[in-house]
Every structure is written in C-alpha cells, then in structure tokens.
Image 1 (cartoon, rainbow, N blue to C red):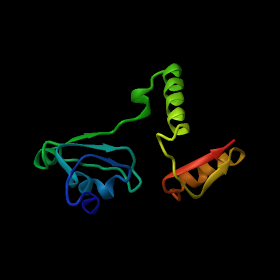
Image 2 (cartoon, helix red, strand yellow):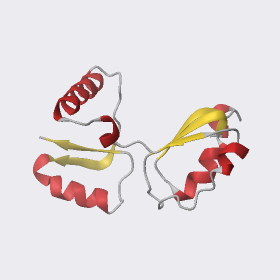
Image 3 (spheres, one colour):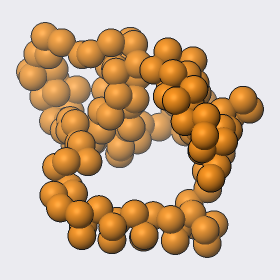
Length: 127
C-alpha cells in the first residue's frame, strides 16, 4: 500500500483476507479511517482489542453483509438490476482470472473450486 500511495495512509481499506492482514490493514488507515472486513480467506479475526482502534487514530471497522442491506425480493431485484447495468455500461469492470470461467451447466464445479479456495478475484458463469 505504501508503494502505491507514496507512503500516504488511506481513508478506507477493504480487507477480504482476515486474520493475516488485520494489523497491516489497520496500519494503512489515516486518522478516523474505515476498515471494511468482508472475508476470512486466512481465517477469522478473533480476540479483537477495541482499544487498538483508538491507539491507531480513532478508527472504524465494519463487517457488512448482503442481508444487512437487502431485506426482501424487490430490493434484491433493484440492486441486481443496478449492478448489472453498471457492469454492462463499463462503469464497473469485472476482471475474471484465467481458468475461472465456467459454463452454467458446470456450476457445481465452479462452486467446488470456490469452496477449495483455489480462486483469486472473480469467477464467471456463462449461460
């Protein structure tokens, strides 16, 4: 992160790794920065000392989930339509790693690969 930002701290960190990057992610944040934890690839973060958030600059941490934002089918449909529209228009770019594109009839295989943690980045199912 320091190399990318020229040594500057950032306002927000999105961390999908978990246990192995917890401290480093907090260290990247500027005062009153926000860490968004959305995965546990290296294992869950446990035994958190909340005082460390104060020591590192009054930091905020959140662990959002889809269920916290989408509570019914209508909201899910609206959010999905908006997301797919942004992808189709190129506003959001989806880079799919080599070997992570599957035909829809191979969805079971795609899930097996995901569950084995053998993927990096996005995977794609094609109807």
